[in-house]
Structure formats: structure tokens, C-alpha cells
Length: 318
Ligand SMILES: N[C@@H](CCC[C@H](N)C(=O)O)C(=O)O
Picture 1: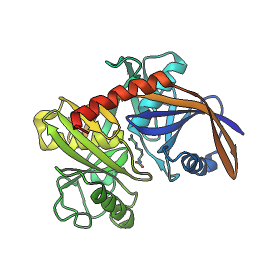
Picture 2: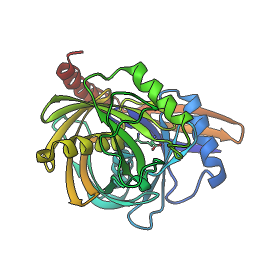
Picture 3: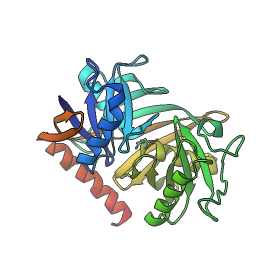
């Protein structure tokens, strides 16, 4: 079978996008293995986005991690899926379906020429621990010590439909995060569905840096839902920052996030950033083999993305 793909990314979080709106191409029982095979063939890929028919919007995004697990939601992926669907349906503002929730997409202009820019509105962000879940807690995990992971850090748990554990720290060390990410996998009695782990470092009041060790993937250049969860925790610790736009730097660029308090335990966020195409081509797929044939590259978008990286590197003095 030959399947068209677009390889795309939101701040360096890379996906293969497969359009199944008119026809299901990969059967349900094969989606997981197909995603593993794609990500094994291209080690830069973090997952596969399937765009299908939507009940609650113009289309529906499903996200499979590189290990083949399906996640409830993907913030960076939603920007890419939103850009693609906006182009196909010739729309700039529309609602979009995902596994659990419906979200709103707004195609916006970027300050950097040729850098496609998308804002998504994310509702129903919750700190109710039952929606995550973490076992052994009844209500919330807010600035709590979790001794299985660290003796010092204070963690907060957040659900953006998918589960997140976030902390604020001055020291974001790769090996410390990896060790904790691996401990999370071992402690199924605490984290039965796994959890994405994000560390946030404050640069100044309105600017932060976030890195994530993702469930089902490991380190990615950025994680949209991880950044939203980390900024929510930052606002919970500094309530005057609710409704303020926070610049979030990450290993793959920069995004803008504003978190609002809707009601007790329920929050929403606007999340804006690039949704860039890298290449398009064909995936040649048989049940036990897969190969990827690139046909064209989006060189102007690549150049525009380098400008974003330059801004980020300058800020972080890399
Ligand atoms: N990178 C994504 C999140 C992808 C899913 C995550 N690994 C999970 O299993 O929950 C994002 O941008 O939000």
C-alpha cells in the first residue's frame, strides 16, 4: 500500500501526518504497529498524527507516540493538524475533534515570514488527580514531594486530557529528568497510565524555559501539553500571572501561552506557535515492512524556522 504523508513539526516536535478524512488507510488494529514502524524508519519522528472525520469539528486528530501508544491529546500536533485541515477546508477559524475533547483553532500570521503560525484554544485543563491519575491522592497533587522521584522537587499534576507532572526548578539536567522519566515507567502502582514529566525554569517573570520527558517517546524538542501544564503550575504559584501571555522557550523554539482560571480546578489556555512542514512523500507499507520515500522539501519553511531557532538561541545564549 502507498500512503501520502506530510512530515511536520511544532517547535521541533516532529510528526508524520496521514490524511484519512475521506478514507481510512491504516486499519484500527494496525495503527499502533504502523506508528512504531514509521518512527523506527525515521528516528527524528516523535509520533504519527491521523486526521480523520470529526464528530465535533471539521476533522479529528489522533496521536500515536513513537512506542505505538495512543495519547489522548497532543498540543504541538494539534497546531500541525489545524494548519493542514485549515488549508484543505479553506478555513481560518474552526473547531477540531480529538479523542476526548473538542478544541478551537485560529490560523494566525507570524512575525517571521513563511513561518506558519497557529493558535489553539484548549479548555478543560484540570488539576483533579482522578483525571490523571496518580494513585494515593484524593484531590490534587499541588507542590507535593514525590519521594519515588526526588527528595527535593515539588510536583504538580495536571490533565490536558493527557497526564502531566510538572515542577519549577533552576536546574534542568537531562540525566536527572531521564532518570525520573524511567522511574515513572517502573512505578505503575503510582502512575497507572504513565505521565509526561516537564521541568520549568524561570528566565524572568514573563519568560520561562520548559523541557519534557514524554510518555511513550522520551525527550522531545518540545511538548505542547507539557508546556501548558508547566505554565498552569507557574500561574498557580504566581496567581497574578493568570491571563498574562507567557513566552515559553524550549529546545525547539518558542511558543506563547496564556492560562485562564475558568472555575475551581478547571482552566483553559491559548497556545500559539509554529506549525511547519518539513517534507512530503510516500510511505510504502506492507504488514511487515515499511519504507519512506521523500518527494519534496519545504525549504522556505525550513529557513523561516531557523530564524525562530536563532531568536531562541540568542535568548538562551547557546
Ligand atoms: N508532544 C505532545 C504530546 C504527545 C503525547 C504524549 N507523549 C502522551 O503520551 O501523553 C504535545 O505536544 O502535547
